[in-house]
Length: 128
Image (cartoon, rainbow, N blue to C red; front, side, top):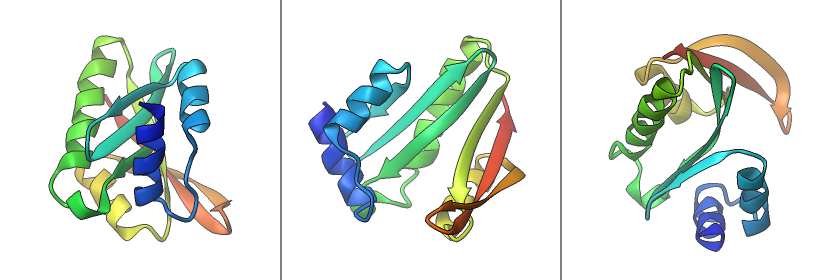
């Protein structure tokens, strides 16, 4: 599973691919991982809040609703676990990502200057 995740992450993020060990460490530290043949989402729950750590869809399969479906799956799961708010960060220059998250109901709540190699990160949240 971790090798497959690493290979898919490399397709999604060729400039900063994560290794199988990176994903193993995330799972060992309490993160949940959902993976399909064409996408993955990594998130963690802390008390009544959750955070999406990363989400990726095979570039050949984008714009088919896979990412929003994965977000919907975790929203149902975390709501049943008492989570009240879901957070994520997105690079300010990631137009497609910002649109996806806005369409899923996330709102900007903060800014992390130069978080991604000099690019600002927009902190977004959604009430669950």
